[in-house]
Image (cartoon, rainbow, N blue to C red; front, top):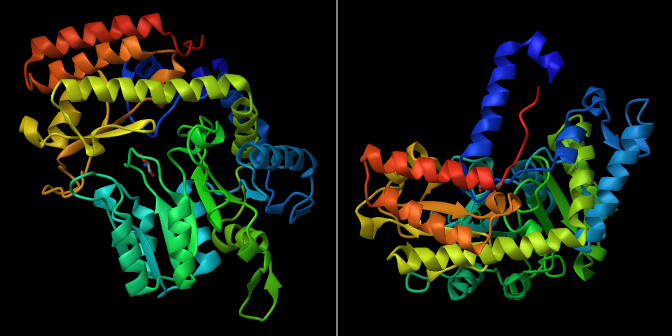
Length: 430
Ligand code: DSN
């Protein structure tokens, strides 16, 4: 980064400080990961200069021959990873992918069923402050109070009563596998379309470790930067589906394939020029995810999450559903007399990065919350395993049980520094 150092020392310093933060602190935010240097290099390259509105072979600008190569590679690799028939790699984020998905099957005012945000859903699954809740009539399902698992009876009852046009499944703070087949059976009974948002478990699904929605849902959306370990961005996947094969009749009476509708919703519907440097980096990440090493990594992500969950349960922490099938766990701190906000702040002071999170049936506001969400994708990328998870469980507990005691935070910080030195991440640039 020697050019940047001279051109803009302040930004250079902020980036170096962020590299040190990522290197030296424990990253337990479930939606974050550390990309490879190859992905970073692709993102920092001249494809950022190129306008490429449209799709490979059919652009609105000249000079797209090489970005076409990158986008085609990204699409082909993603198809292989997820066993998809059609892929759109242009969404700038998961939210952009979701808005394109909504408009593929529904129009403003239609009823949409999504998971309650407080129970683990996502803003784009119907929150009143988001486009989804503002444009559509939202009805919500949640988890069972006793088990913490999605209440499929409730999903079925609400679907039968409300007859939604669209059901969106998937979550951002739900630790268990989702039964996409059961969702599809429920959707089919009322003629609803089914979308799965796999932003969180995408990498685990690509690695074949948890169930894939691709053959059960009309359409699948994801982000590319969580368990999938690519650059920040979104993607839409379509699998083989008899109903999709019939296509969609547009308001002008033309029958179009679901892929065509998705593509025109992404561009020109909701986005302009695609971020070609990010698409190139997505292609690099997908190539990495197709390697056998990515499966080994993903197996370890789940093993680590289960080891950490067990350790926390042994230390008397209440985990939603009492554990996890994936990379994520949700801790209800009410038995510790602590809010998520206080815990997040204390853990950060001690060198552990997590996020406060609503827990099912929470009595606190989203700014305070009763819980924290933690996950293992990032630490697993560093090479940490079950032994380190045991240690980390103890460190979390020391902070939570000693809120406000600086000497404890200091001791935890120094243990974390030592741990991080054993699992090096990025080199600081010259
Ligand atoms: N912000 C993401 C997460 O943390 O899960 C969801 O958009």
